[in-house]
Amino acid sequence: MKKPFIINLTLGVTMILTAALTTAMTPTTKVADLRDTLDLEVLIPSSFDDWRLDTSIVPLQIDPKTQAQLDKLYNQVLARTYVNSDGARVMLSVAYGGDQSDHLSLHKPEVCYLAQGFEIKQNAAVETTTQFGDLPSRRLLAVRGNRYEPITYWVTIGDKAVLSGVGQKLQQIRYGFSGKVPDGMLVRVSTLDANTDQAYRMHTTFIQDMLASMDVPARDRLIGIFDF
Image 1 (cartoon, rainbow, N blue to C red):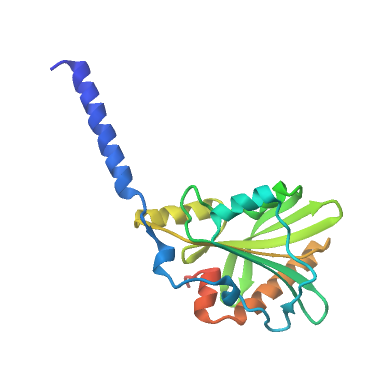
Image 2 (spheres, one colour):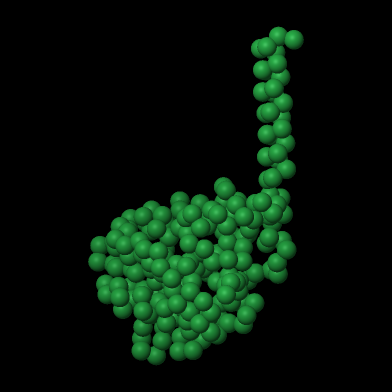
């Protein structure tokens, strides 16, 4: 048997085995199909503590092109504005995607805001302190003209809150090894305020108040399950 033939045969077998292994390791079971049906309108309370719905201000409006892309990624999107008795307003946006595979990943706010003509002045990884554990989050400052919008957001992949980016990808891979495709949620809290320190304190208070008002199953869907 000639050497070139042996080499070609070996390469051919290797390619077949690689293809078979890739197919075998491709996740096929969606976590979303194994969980209770999610309704963001029900999951997120319309009023809690000192916060009530305010319809006078809505979160960032998306241009049609970006909206078309988001429609492919998310099964549900909830956008609300809340106001407290002092007149302080907080915008909340929650997006849920039942398929967090490689080609359908959550659309990070920094990308979305850039597409809307904003400049991202700050982008920092932080831990938001809650009564139920420290939540891995990001804080952004999006600026367009005289609009200053401090943003706090977090991502859950499956049953864990993770830092967007590498942490998000690692969680997808962990699920992939178990043959499952995780679902995911992105929760964004923002205010219109040039005083970022004041804004982020307000975000933390709002998040803590919201989480305290939710029952355990609902809260676990929103922030994941913490390991203590």
